[in-house]
Image (cartoon, rainbow, N blue to C red; front, side):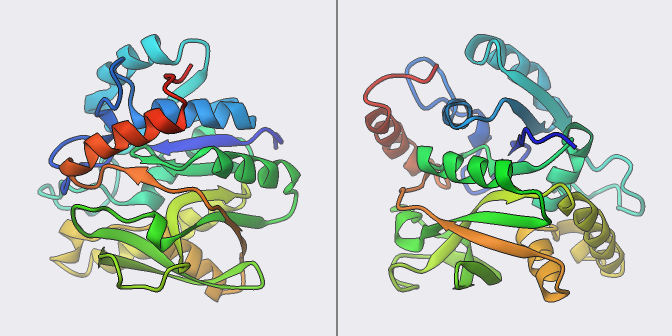
Length: 281
């Protein structure tokens, strides 16, 4: 097992609330995406291997884009599709969730790995926290970057976050919560933004729990069309069974993302300011 961690970028989402593919939305005058800035920040922190999990229909566009913005970086593509998932009805369209997205990339994950969303800007601090943890991690330990809920909200509508219960620096429980608005949780409440650092052993746990998830939804005609298998659910289940220690790495950084279409201009301004007016290289 290599000690060079891999960064897995989940970029196969449909962007239903945004009304388009958030992961392929330009946020600067040079046409770069949020994930271009994420790769630049991760590279600065020490990451050298990248896997972008995409829908096959977007591959040509990503290849063309990365040839322009990421020349010289080791970026591979993995495909999140419903093909080969036994028992799914032909009218299932929605992807199977973030746990399935990571499993779609497992052939490109030789060692410890980090996971991020393509449409979230996490800040430079987060990548250094995760990279350093993974570099030193030889036991079956995992980590999550924890954000203060007030630093992760949108001015233009509700968001979905993993609400975390933390004790002595470790994650005890995480609850995937939808329709969060300002004021619903006290300032300082730790939330997950789907930025994880996993020991390689988590891949086996993901496979096991994804199979359990599939067996469950195949018994329900409605769930089999819409339900997703979230990383947060798998981590929570593994913890309940005593199979995981997840350390919470707090960051003061503010999240920037485009949950809603109206968020876009604010993201453009914020990232330009954070980058000192310079585009990523």
